[in-house]
Length: 175
Length: 251
Image 1: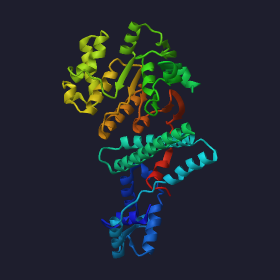
Image 2: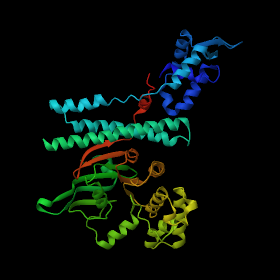
Image 3: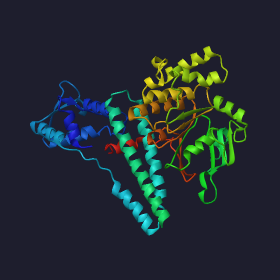
Image 4: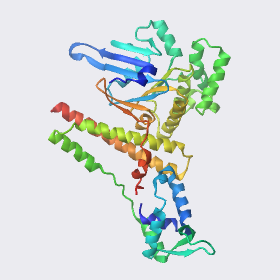
């Protein structure tokens, strides 16, 4: 996850690290559970070193990282604005899988269709998990919206596999 | 491909060496060509495959809508491939439910009348049938549409009526053929939710579908090509925390 995410979460108002974590968890739902709890603090420390964030300890409380209030510096605010204006590109790794099929078929090492089958099995397991998680979210929740994105991406990958399967079956029957 | 062990012992639906061939000589079509299948009670099985792979024909053979050229189908231990027409018709009314892509509702009957029809045809008392049908409509979220004709319902609502109808006789197995084939994405989600609910309630489901989302509700997914099963995947068990990686949250 990019540092800018943590930075942007501070844009509303100065906050404790644990408040940031709670905001992230709410927005991510079950997907956020995989997040390392220390990651937010590590990121905040880096952002502070980079001059994008300032910190002050809350008065009268023990000196612990979760008692520190973080806020954006002007440079941090500028960075957030830049980040919001950036276009995000998805990073599907289709080429590797495609080349795996081509190489397997060319060298006669493995049946491309079996490779497609194995890939599909794994994608469907993930789709099942993502879909269950999505259905368990209340309508209109942030986490549900993210999970819907996961479901749609997996569907797209599965459809492409179907196209690969058809194509390799055709090639096999022609050869 | 045949299942052994636990599934075979508790199978509510079983097929052995199932074949359906059409035509002959050069024109012979092997729509279903040697299928073995055991479906355990409470299991959801999805069959996927390209158009023309024989999956709809398979569903018809398993549900007693068509007879195999060869092989056996047993439902709850009873062979249905050799049943007489009358017994088979009764079996279809009482032991199985069907959901089709095109809904197949009676257009001149209201939603609740459609749902209660199988029970009435089976000679159940009308009042009890009506009570149960209203309950089933409530279960699919259409309690307030009971008196509507199908033409006054959306596609998704019609399919939910059809699912309620399929459950009317408390069937051993519900068979669904492309249940979301005519539905938009929001209505598909409604059907997904219903299937998950049925599954949790212990309903046995066999679904043939193109829709990855429906397939992903299954415990077991079978891929079919040219009339035969070519791959089988157990989907239950899950992948744990891998979903985080899919949204860029790893590490």
